[in-house]
View 1 (cartoon, rainbow, N blue to C red):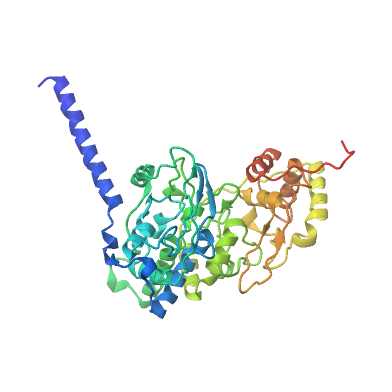
View 2: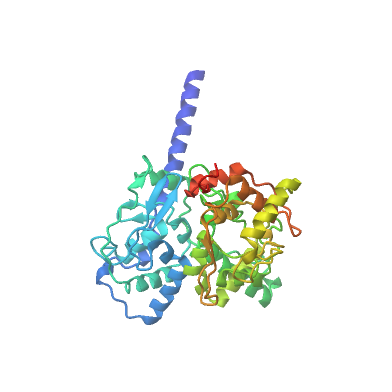
Amino acid sequence: MSVKKKISYGVATLAVLAGIGILGRMWSVLDTTRSQVADNTTVLANLHSNDAAAIKRGEYVMRMSDCAACHQADFSGGYKISTPFGDLQTSNITSDKETGIGNMTERGFFNAVRQGRGEKGFLYPAMPYTAYAKLSDADMHDLWAYMSTIKPVNNKIDENGRMNFPYNIRLAMLGWNLLYFNNSGFKPDNLQSDTSAQTTADTASLNLINRGKYIVDGPAHCSVCHTSRNALGGEVESAYLQGGNLGTWFAPDITPDIHSGIGSWSRTNIELYLKTGSEGKSVAAGPMAEAVEHSMQYFSDEDLHAVSAYLKSLPASNSPQAKPLVMDEAAKKQGALAFEVNCSSCHGVQGEGINGMVPAFAGNHSMLNNPTNLITAVLVGTRAPHTAERQTAAGMPSFAWKMDDEQVANVLNYVRNSWGNQAGEITAKDVLELRQKTGAGEKITPPGSR
């Protein structure tokens, strides 16, 4: 056989094997057999569950999954989600037949929530079906029962009408799913293989951690925000929960890393933060404040224990400590004066804050790494979440009108390098970039001062 023929046969063989691999992967991604446990006869508009216990459990699943934050309080949709590929609007998931999901059966609902396959085609992973794939059949049944209690609202939504071409073509999501979607249910961690060495305490501890893993990876979909993404929007598995960019906000590292993560937090700190929006020093803001307000404050104490146990069981990200900034005296004085005039009345003269309401700067490690949230808060303002245990949700106004980019950088460099803090430099360029992204206005110049 000639060398040319051998090469041709080799290439053909590789092509066949590659084709088989692609077909196998496509089968795995498109497989909806898990949904066969769901009813495929009664549409949502005609369903009225009388199972009070299932409805109550379903409402809890909805809270854990944070559905109301994106689909609005009445579930009629329209919430804008900005992505690097354009803007999405959340869908109407009420039982309205014309504009909602009233014509969807339970099986169709399972396919949409867990496989990302809706009535209009493939869903976008801004709807975190990549995490909801882990939801159990029982939780899905209960959620469906709860959905039957939602009043229909006629509200037509063009979900992907503002996405840039070609990302506005839903079929393109098939390719994305082939690359990144893990179409499998939740798999708990197991104890050591030597069962004779297992104790009741070991089993109880692992069950607690597995419950936390289920919540974090499934309904709470924490990795969707707290894990960095590649250029195509796929989660970087090696950076699991080590922090992710949310445009004008940053979801921080929530591994036990002592420098960039929550290594200095106790399990009680974690649980208090999730339940109330503050562990005493840090206060949730931006998207995290929404998650606490709409979802996590409703977690049971048992589930809060489970989440904290799981997060503390993870390996730390081992992020290096940032090289501290040595401020020159002029910049330090300017920063100190700006802090005294603009910040000290709420954050305290010594950066002590107000427990549970206004973030402390002194001894607050969470503000010493990625500075995105601090800059955004100064430029556009923010507010703490409103929770049952903390009714007074403190707010912070925008200072974009009062400070230019250099002044914002100076005051933030001051607070990040005072009272024992050590952090890297924030530049005027960093502030300018976020000023432009957030649409914050420029500093107002008084008439006659030019």
